[in-house]
Image (cartoon, rainbow, N blue to C red; front, side, top):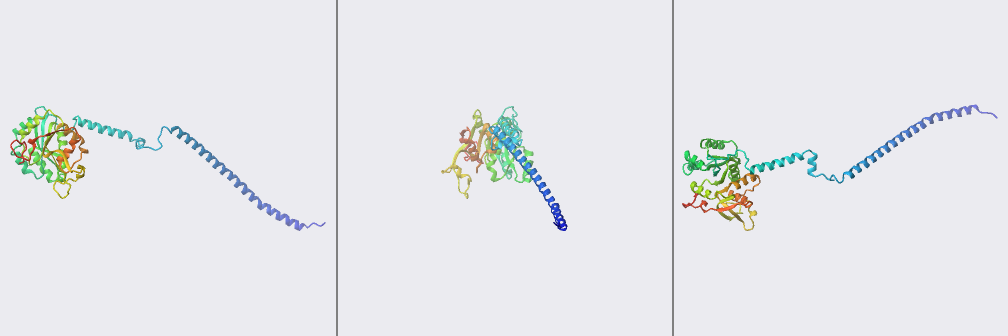
Length: 346
């Protein structure tokens, strides 16, 4: 049998080539399988680790379920932020301040008069920037000066013109009042009040609060600048009520609430006074008196007290909510100029 060596050599040559080409393919497969195994092991490890973490968190939540709310309240958030103690301190400070005010520990307080006793009354006469002529007329008539004024204050009666500040703080209006006060020393300047016609209802709030904060007196009296006051008659009336507390005194009246905007004495808050549109009982605005306890109430709560279109209505509304003793004093009805009146209109 004859062997074809040429064909055999050729066949062996081709087989060698095939084997040499198949070797790299097997190596790549093995490498890919190795890295796939590593990736699988990594993923399995992470999944196992995550499962362990979830189990741990679940146990912690179950343990603290009865101790912590599911939803944080505002208080919890404040505590977490470190603000809870600060909030509590602020509330306590406000309570302490209110208590101190109610007990008389106030700034600028002048607690005794020249005689060493509490004043009988602080009389505040409303005035404005254009009221110089009226002020001078009062100083020349029923308001004493010099030794007479000193004797009046020794009796415990202080008389002051009451005015706020200009809307343009520090302008010529303010400077003129400062100069007049420097000369006469008979003003109570309401630094926090803006002297303007639309702000008049708030003036009573600032007057009683500031007067109480400045002088310790049995009574605080508000007077309009068109009243010619009989000081001796007023002192007699006040002395007769000196032993009483919570006194709200004046010429008591009521009246219709004006709901038409175009009319005089219009009340923007008319709807609050019911279907009958009637004001409650209150002291007329020309002159009325509050005892020390009621002035203190206004001083402490001045930031929360509602004002209406008129100052006497505003004060009357504040008195409804407290145990005020209403004194309807006919001699304080200033619309009449009869001789027995303590405050005839000038």
